[in-house]
Length: 164
Image (cartoon, rainbow, N blue to C red; front, side, top):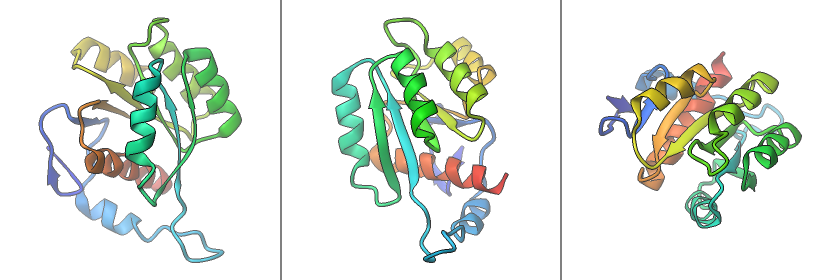
């Protein structure tokens, strides 16, 4: 499997439909017509562990193409933030302590169809992965993904959604 022409280990990034490199290159021309600059991807992080949220924020804060619009520590707070902030993409930990990760994904994707959800998880569970896609997730990513791959996965998903 590859993402943007870079080989990925199995299950590191499981896109609902893998993008081809040519799609990404074509879509890199998407710009903000007012100033000719590609718009930043608005990102929301939902994870019940503060240390994980902080680590993700630190990892993604250096990406010039990403604007972190917020983070939330639970399902209800995350759904409210997604509705209020209207991010392009939500990074969502599916195995939160309240057990509502799938419900959170479903609620966000139903209320905000323009918002994509990337599921974050520590280990692969094939049944959970299938359930996540059925709940509306666009991607399933292991937390041990390196920063550059995570940024590429976020951008590839945003660019794919810009075309639709």
